[in-house]
Image 1: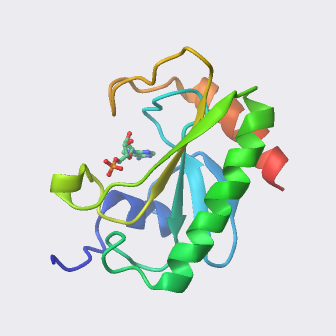
Image 2: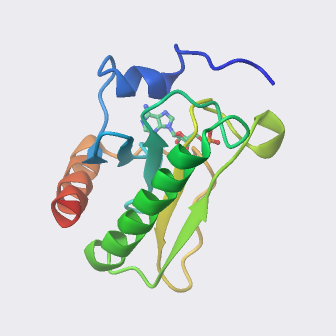
Length: 140
Ligand code: AMP
């Protein structure tokens, strides 16, 4: 498998070199809004430690990311009035992965509303800021 590239865009976000709409952080995990959400509130949960994807992540980090993804999902149900939550995670190009730092997509869903295609439309900054503020408050 290809080695972890420390210059991937999410590594830069984790180092604070690029901005993000942060919703949660602890010593081992970081979560922020996807800027091209498939539905309002679409959140990405990452381990802070370098990991390309599920194929190289230490099991402890993976378990912690899953725990935080659950916490985010529960908060999204309230904050976005969701009827359900879709959780996705892609590995290697063949598996649909585009950014090569492990991340779990947590996407609030409304009954009868289809998700937008991946990376189809960039959300307005003020909308992302408002959603991040509400979700972060629910997760604090
Ligand atoms: P994938 O690697 O297939 O799971 O997809 C990467 C995801 O990252 C896509 O949903 C993109 O919309 C999202 N994305 C790309 N760049 C950024 C960024 N700077 N901030 C937040 N999300 C991003």
